Image 1 (spheres, rainbow, N blue to C red):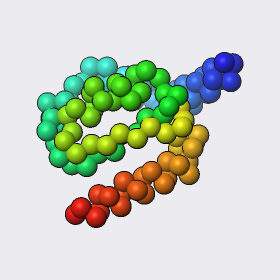
Image 2 (tube, rainbow, N blue to C red):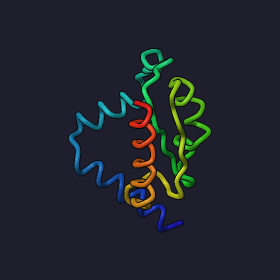
Image 3 (cartoon, rainbow, N blue to C red):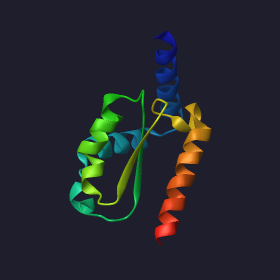
Image 4 (cartoon, one colour):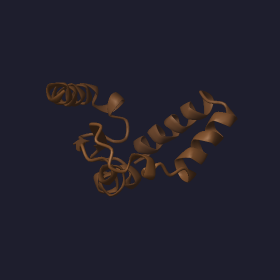
Length: 109
């Protein structure tokens, strides 16, 4: 558990050190207060939602199905064997997943 805490603390510290107070405030406002569901409801643009098997409950498969996936007609959900940062934790699997999605989307076009 200590390792996970260190990863979360490192991510939070990195975010804090690499952004301005104004950017952090705007991001948190957008994340907590802005609802764009009416703008995307029924959207048929292909969407790939990716979560990790070890992601937090705010980003897990069930939450994504109840939120993002219900608004997009042409959405797919893939769960990777990772936490919230597959680009760092499972980069090869993430790249292969994105390539497969891109091939599916371009074949339909």
